[in-house]
Every structure is written in C-alpha cells, then in structure tokens.
Image (cartoon, rainbow, N blue to C red; front, side, top):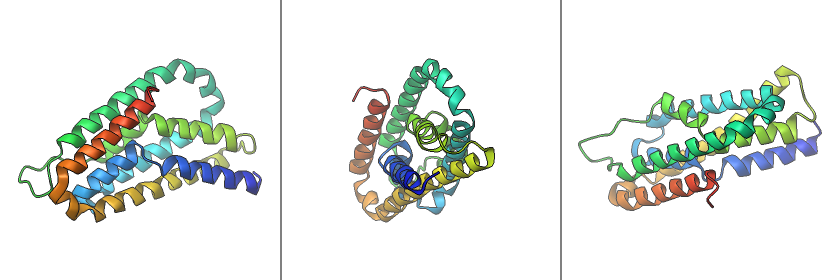
Length: 197
C-alpha cells in the first residue's frame, strides 16, 4: 500500500471512530459513573468485538458485498433499536452516590454492541474495500490492518472514557442533565443508523 493511501485511510478512520457514536457516548456515560478501571471489561469487550468485525471485513469483504444488501437493512434496524435501548438505559442511570447501584457494563455487552453497531460494520467494510484490498490480499497483512483499525478505534474509546472520568464529579451533581444529553445523543445515533437523519 502506498504511504499516501495509508495516511488517507488513517485520517478517514480517525474521523470515523473518534466521532460520537454508540461506543464513544456509552463510554463517556459509563466512565463518568464507574471510572476507567470500572469500565475495563466493557472496553475490552468493545475492542474484541471490533477486532472480530475488522477480521471478518478483511477476510470476507468481497463476499459480503453480495450478502450485505440483503442483511444490511435488517442489521441497520437491529442496530438502531439496540442503540435506542442503550439511550433508555442511559436516561434511567442513577448517580454514583445512590445506594442502589446498577450492574456495570460487561465484556459481553461491549462485544455484543459491536455485532449490532452499524457504524463499526460499515467502517470495517469501507476501510477494507476502499483502502486495503485494492493493495493487499495476504491474510497476515489483512489481520495486521484489522488490528490497526481496531487500535485506532480503541484510542478514540479511551479519549471518550477519560473525558467521562474527568466529568465524574460534575456528573454526581448534574446526573439528570448529563444522562439526558447522552441519551439524546444516542437517540441521534440511532436515527442516523436507521437513515432517518
């Protein structure tokens, strides 16, 4: 792959995975409540799911081009519905000081989020079909690119999680406002996924 294409792919990937989306907004929200260490399992679930999708995108991109048109509408609406569910859970979240604590997000929740996260699915398919597969076809190299794309997403996740962690004190006093804003952002993501915005 030429360096110019690699740089263009990296910039496109950063703009995609560092922008607001279900992963980043949910990490902002949960890190404001549980901190970074309380979200490690959830984040590793997100990263594992993301790596799985990047590998599938790389290995099956040409085949998926034929299959996705039939699956894409179903996945799009399943993903949008799941993000709406996340918005509802975010809206209902209690402040950290309340005695009744909700269950922390789990590895499985992070992994499952990726399997219905249309943004990440489209991201993987786009990066491989537009930037990688025209230049590289060997499985080890494709796996390396899958890891690289997941790593860029993980950096974006960490940025959003650290922002949530820094807002923890503010969140304790203004949790209804922050939950409302984050829930509305997730609704916005859901509407974008469904193609309604």
